Length: 639
Image: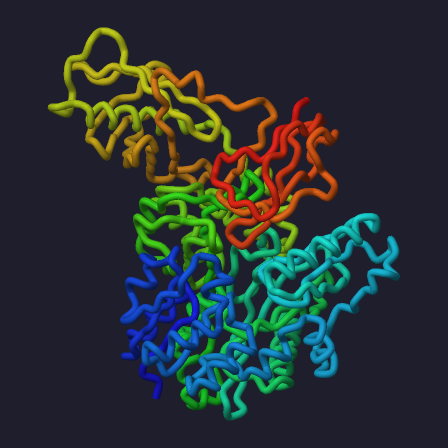
């Protein structure tokens, strides 16, 4: 019997495992870096152990410290979560050697799947369909496009799509460097890139008594940077023959390596309906909640039961309905998916959906870890209903703090191509990112009016309507690169607002404004955090893609004239580390528009800094290894 579990992880997955442990009467042990000292997973655990340092390499990737923490806290089992050391056979062995139960597959099974190249050889012998590898030295134009992939790890790191043979050598080197930095293993390989393919996976669960469950399919085709954004179960639009093929291949894969516990076998499905093995994740997946919702299971509870030696039932339960999950990231999709940092003032969703989150109100979103804030999961009897439910919940969410991908998620779920299962493929964002991130200013002005009116109430000693000087009040807000100047008067006759003819004020408070707009009553919730103002309203009728929330920066009436930067200055968009400078690049060199100058690493990703225009690199004040803050001058390109 397992009585105490240490989760060798952080954030959302640690909280997820703790939730099941509490329900089963199992005590919980958290580990934390210094950056996570006040994190929710630490606060919720029965016991917590500090891992000195901030960087993952010094903390969550130190297997020796994690084993020592488990023993010091009196845990008798370790759950690895996902990411970090969850697929590290050496760590699994160290846990077992310390006399602790490992809540995962046998180390030999992890080792068999650790290298994608060796895993493919093993799967080939087991009769699992594969894409034939390509020798980069023998590649020709007929082989294009190609995909360069890291042999170790996952999450899209060390992966490059190559469309021109001349770029292959450079992309091989770049992928190898990224893989070595992320996983300590620079091995990469090349295979055909399937244009228009779908990413479909099968959840498996195996006990130690010879039973293997294949728990249906999931579609994870909507991806950015080869990382999943929206997932659903079951994968829609598959023929029964293809489903049977996928289930059979996943079963053979599990049995070929003596698998035990929860795992996922991932496939690429081309436009003709042929499936090819991609990899096997020997751990719980981020998207496991959609399978739980459809099958009515707790996969973490089953992991614990299997680790205790209990058998599974002969057959799994039957699936019911459809579930969709969206990953909510602190990132700006319109700016190259740049991660965002800062204080998350509020994260709240309406009832009726499942929220798995690693953060709570007031937490700081830092630079050391993945920018995923939460997963939002909706279940319904049909796919259309589940998609509608999830889009509506995201639209009504209160998200106050850093920029998120919320609007992108809502628009993706309502896009005609997504609602047609036959049109799904991994190129969705390559085709539609521009339209999905188009900001515009339609509708934002009335939200700014609500912000100004709420501010007026907050500054009024008496509140409500009052006499004011004959001149209008003026407030200016910035939102999405556009300034909104609001001129208004509040008097005994009600509201007068320039550019808003016919808008009437129905109610006014410091955190709520109710307006009559062309005969429609619209309430606006207003929240202030310093000079930032978040305004939320119920979504417009008809399920449009116009945002129902806007975040503004209140601008001073007289801006500081010294707040300027030299033309052509490139400033750090986030805190991070300069990992490398473009080869041979020095001050005085001519550069072309879009030419890569340097790379920053933040939130487990590399971010390319490019020349904004053709010109001369006149300043390059940073060096590899240098830590930079937001706004640090990285380079200056003079036209």
